Amino acid sequence: MPNEPLLQIGTITDRMADALDAKFDRTVLFDQPDRAAFLRDRGADFRAILTDGHWGVPADVAATTPNLKVVSSYGVGYDAIDAPSFAERGILIAHTPNVLNDEVAVTAVMLWLAVYRGLVPADAHARSGAWEEKGFPLTRSPMDRRVGILGMGRIGETIAQMVQAFRAEVHYHSRSEKDVPYAYHATPEALAEAVDVLIVITPGGPETKHLVDADVLKALGKGGTLINVSRGSVVDEGALIDALQDGTIAGAGLDVFEQEPKIPQALKDMPERVVLTPHVGSATMETRQAMGDLVVRNLTRWLDDGTVETPVPECRSLNG
Ligand code: 8YV
Image (tube, rainbow, N blue to C red; front, side, top):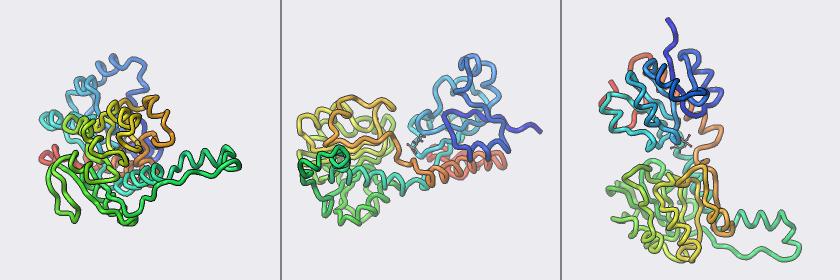
């Protein structure tokens, strides 16, 4: 029997490719010189798609794959996939929850510490020899701060646990109050008002677009720091730039941006107060291996029995 055709969108690791190629006949969308012609001619062959959180399933692919049954995404966030309409078509979507909780939490804490302790300018100071002329200015201690978590899901909870090491007082906002020992606030603005550091880790998508706007930044206030490790769309980037430039807030640590991989020059121009990373929240060898293995397990299990290990909530009723 020929292997099951698999359409790959985005890049994967060699380990994933080796595991998949034993069972699937993998075709890489971005290798096709004429994407429209390829999708027209071959789209109907694919029952399975492998993608990631950045690319999701683009509209032209969704429209040309009438026999699609499963999408396995290499990431936890699936805002680039129209999950409700896929669920309606009976298509299972799988993602990679939990295995990246620690790593994304580490990234959030790393950005917070880097902003507070001036890691990037301190490195520049040491490296340039400026230290021979003058000492480095004093910075802010991260200890005993009020830390706000916007989005108390699995990663939010992991961040809350991790910041205990810094004796943080944890506050949060999410759509509903959770059974957690932290102070709940009914709105993002009330949360921002109550904290020194606001860490954004809510899912992306239309429901959370610009949840952090000018009003939330104003509430965060002059000494406030914004950390975003979720999706660029959750923060109004224009309002954030204004707030940083006019001193409405003190600093920011950003791993995600509205137009990735493009980063506004204004953000790059504030290295003393803004730390930037290129969407590397989960990007360690260990965590990407765990995520990749889960992507492969979801696809091979679907091949075996038509179910996946980690469906997104919208598709749970389709999973066997
Ligand atoms: C990936 C992510 O960078 O899991 C997510 O939602 O944002 C990241 O782990 C993303 O899936 C793109 O590969």
